[in-house]
Length: 344
Image 1 (spheres, rainbow, N blue to C red):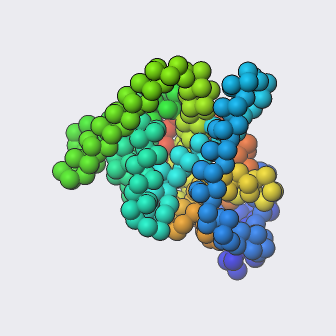
Image 2 (cartoon, rainbow, N blue to C red; image 1 turned 120 degrees about the horizontal axis):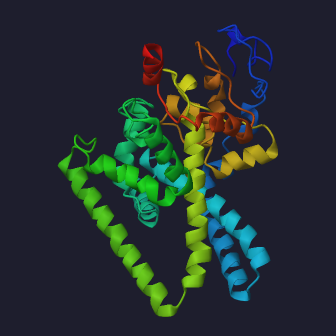
């Protein structure tokens, strides 16, 4: 599965990159030919989203029991579990936007609309704006990364945006997409799509009015806070941190030089990738956006460095997180920033 030009594997940590001659970072992953065999797309991988939803329902039931019983010592860790599973379900919105969540198009649309409505997001709006992310990856036309992709945006505004997105993602992320919808010119140009977006926003508004009404009538605020609000806030922040890990600070003009990918070989790392619908294989997804998440690990050779500035995937999220933290003092994305640096 690995190109013969690399000698059968990605360069070892400390060895020179076979294309650039630069040392390979010590936190880089070595991928051998057995890696893909560890990720054969059996039924569990293909059913990951359904298993996530089932696990989320079970975790929520357990959480309701602990809240009712006042077992705070057990409630807190369960909130963390629920938030991680919610994060995985949020990635289901991304899969649905690519038409890959369900084989049946109607079910795919239904799941996307439901996840979006419960996340203060229009599914159709997410799909259009996410298309700009793929078509204009981390350039100034990538609306998902406004304002970090805008070279005209002062650093203090980009810092403020990063702070809100990483700490209040449940509300800030819908704002970024709504801004793209309302700005001029907007990437959403079709009148039919704009009507559908307005309908989905109205659906979300009515849904939440009914939810809040029911909570108030039956006095369920305690359950709402523990079972939805707390884990949803954490899940949205996890989503934002993962998004930033994948791209922020990257200024290359190829997929592998503008994307951080995580390829873990340990059982825990593989479990995390499974529960995140293999989103950690992010560079593969950007090169083959039409592939279902279950087969992304089968194409891990696409993460092999081939051009100047590219690097192997990380062995785990903690290594990529360390690199991201160094970039948050001046959060930016995209090759357009190299031009600004050269002028400066």
